[in-house]
Image (cartoon, rainbow, N blue to C red; front, top):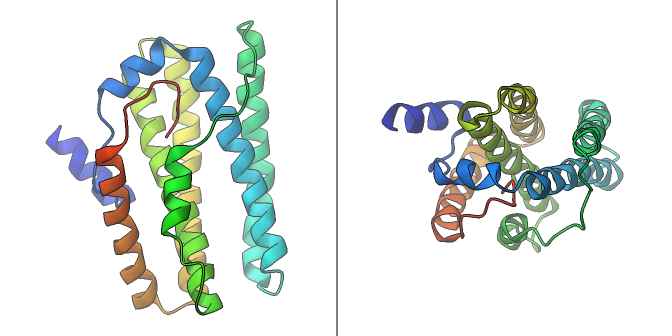
Length: 203
């Protein structure tokens, strides 16, 4: 457990690893976790589109996010195909308590740079936690096929997390980004501590 905690901190910056019981819960609610995963990928794609529209003057940001939109939508299709292959259905989208809590921490007023930074760091944190969760699934599930399935997602999300941090540091002073990122990590740690462990949610 200690080695894993250090690994999570070094790679993703996350302050608290996922409770190991979460994987056991997901294994008994595969249809629900795949449904939630599909919608997570869909929301990631649409959020990147929103950022492109909102910050169209940031040429490098657009260049970097455009292929992410395609990749995230491809992930949505891959999860949807997995559902269909197993004879399962894509259920209804559920309220994402984790993401909504993160959104509540965003700065909604003040300088546009502060709002821009928080939007990028929100995405970085979601991708980092998703990566950590996919790592859990790739190592903890008993189904070898699904372990490989989630290993691919883990590798992809790790790259996305670093991209959003890199973009923030491209447009804003690095000390400012790092200071705010630390605040985000502390907030997310407190959030993870108080959230219910549910096997039907990626987050």
